[in-house]
Image 1 (tube, one colour):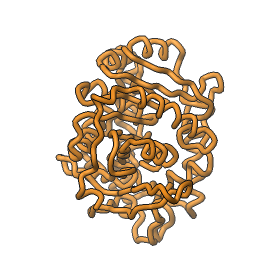
Image 2 (cartoon, helix red, strand yellow; image 1 turned 135 degrees about the vertical axis):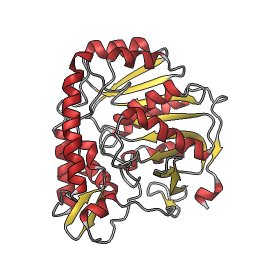
Image 3 (cartoon, rainbow, N blue to C red; image 1 turned 180 degrees about the vertical axis):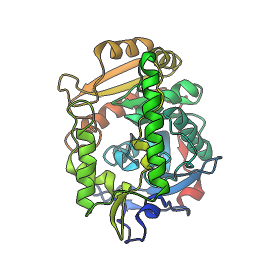
Image 4 (cartoon, helix red, strand yellow; image 1 turned 45 degrees about the vertical axis):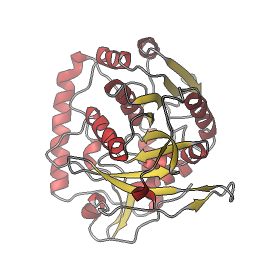
Amino acid sequence: APRVPRPAVVAGAAAAAAAVPRRRLRRAALSSAADDADNLYIHEFSCSACDGIELAVRSYGHRGRPVLAMHGWLDNVNTFDAMAPVLARAGYLLVAMDFPGHGLSSRRSIDSTLHIMDLPFYANEVTRSLGWERYAVLGHSMGGGVASLMGSAFPAQIAGVACIELFGTLSAPAAGSAKHLRRGLRERLKMVQRINEGKIKAYDSFDACVDARRRTVEAAPGKQSLSYGAAARLVERGAVETEEGWVFRHDPRLNAASASYVTEPQVLALLEAIECPVLAIRADPEEGRGWPMPPDMAAGRIAATTDMTMRCLPGSHHLHLDEDTAPAVTDATLEFFGGLDAEAWAEVELPRDRWL
């Protein structure tokens, strides 16, 4: 899979981290290392959302059955480096997006709040700009939650929902609402003040950023881990070198606790609204290396979803990107997409101005 070139050293850590290319990005056609006779066209470009946010997008191929791929928290489109080329060669036009404040997409304004319920809006802005009428969605972690929300919000447009390591969004009991509100407001103030003061953590090297990204995963619930190679792929797009050192590009406000969560009954109601088939891939709960979900919660979400296929596979939370577990995730996804109604999910071509 291609790599995002490491940028030249730039001045100002805070400015560099927030900077986003405003031009349309293009990548030349690249040959597959596995099969030089089978060229895989990979293109980088941007979509302008109607609220002014620039969304960085990467497409794999220029024709096929359309799939919108969405990454997890603090990640970016490189999270699909292992899966996307295989899906593209199997006949799917996979378009992966950086959510606002992630990767190369621009950040939302300093006065805005960040909530997962806003993300389907930006996902829809990408597909709307491409002219897609019917497509499948693929998401990992937070992106899996967004994928399920897309199925609820746009049932006439979604042919299938494939979720990796999260189906439905994170939820919390209503009894904890005041606690979450207090913490969320306190941390929002702290983050906004740091941004206004230009404070941003810098690392000595690219490898230090990789280690930091791995530590973030290891600190998450469960016994999660992330291979060095997988973390490096994420950091290649998610960090930039400055005069002060290496800094992460993502919006620092993403590290603040949420001031509000949906409740589990709300999650179930949203899952009930999905009309298309759903694939949920989980890191095998018996291994305990994925994102933990109580058995009764998982059972309730499965029961609420009309057409659900559950696959539990070996690996940790990033099992779709870690080198030893990604092939099984890709195969399960291909099997699911292959079983969707092909007549209701026609091939499309990437608009020519996006790939010529």
